Length: 496
Length: 101
Image (spheres, rainbow over the protein chains, first blue to last red):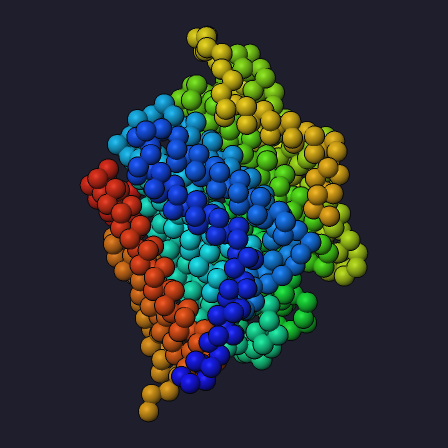
């Protein structure tokens, strides 16, 4: 105890010195408390006050994050690692949150609830805080807290407006499956801590401990740990919740779940990957093999099951599982290089998915359905919407001249380079499966224009769509997909 | 003399009981109980291992945070199960299957 009290001043000094590093998250915490107060006291005076506080909070957080570029630091005894990767990932996350904020506002605009809409912005900010933390850490403790913060916020986002049976069911499946995965991950982490006596997975002591631990126990611990990350990413053995939750949740919440949490989780996974696969010991080979196998299976399962879906939200859920496999491939191929390619693919994926869900939401408000068959004949009524929708679909497949094509091209060429230097068959398999599943995905994305333009619908004339904010977001993101497809350097140079 | 092995065996048993409760899937509340058992097995591990980490007390700190997070997750879980009960009048997961392929 005496030893500790003599160290106390220096520990306190270091904590105080680390606070500036933590500023973006502190801003979000302040905005979180601000939205609670605004919901309680000011929403009766001006109903958009909680939205305004959340909006300003995220903008302020972005403003504080951007100056951290090219200034790598660490804080809180190495718990926070700020590098360019973390800064760009956090900016993408916060920009996506900003858009989701307005999608939520638009979706619930015309509905009346007994519940306060302001609370949902509060929860969204809490999820944003967890995601920010996920991108800046190499410490298991902080990573676990961040994953749980995101998970608990997501459960509430899905379950908060559970007015129908399906929404309640989706929330229950999500919370039970998620908690089980988190508990298994925690047990795996406790074993890893036991082998190494250290919680920082990039540290020398941790890697040394993993090298000397018995292989059977290491396999169990690593597989348990990947259960938790697999749940957040939705890769294959742990993807069962994805379609149910995506279908059951309100559409703007689905657009949040399908994009933003994946960015945080993939950044964490890529940090683990970079720290671990460089050695030639058992645990490195196991990690590499596990991720390669999971990537292949995820791409196959996601794209094949998507073929027979009739609900467009469910189809997008399987499509996002397929894209997760592709993201894993991007993680593998960027193991030695800059994370530039991974960031580009993440940014483009976020753009495409939010655009698609903005269109789904616009159509849902108009025709009250998310079934693909109900889009029959609507192409004549809403030509602009379905043209851009089809175009974003082309980008999701990965055909030129779209940003999705550039993203896939970069990942494929990086993986091919990796194959040429190592001559490992698994990398070749990854390439083949990646190309094959891109072809498969063509069939289900093209069902939307097929129904919209070529099938005859009922002859009732639907009124034209007014230019709402949701529709506008979809159109703008569609054009951004085209812009980054023709001039990819605009985005690539930012990440350079 | 109680050694580290004793703690590990007990925690492994608790973890398996929890996993069984989850996989048997009789009742949503029982699944939550199983989750709680699994988390507590992990916490027991952390505290037992933490005895050998006298510098940072990483295991003890992790145990404290895990307890808080488990409580938060279970609170949300119970609220959601309550809303499911209002719609379905049952909380047996096998009877709640509106969403499926």
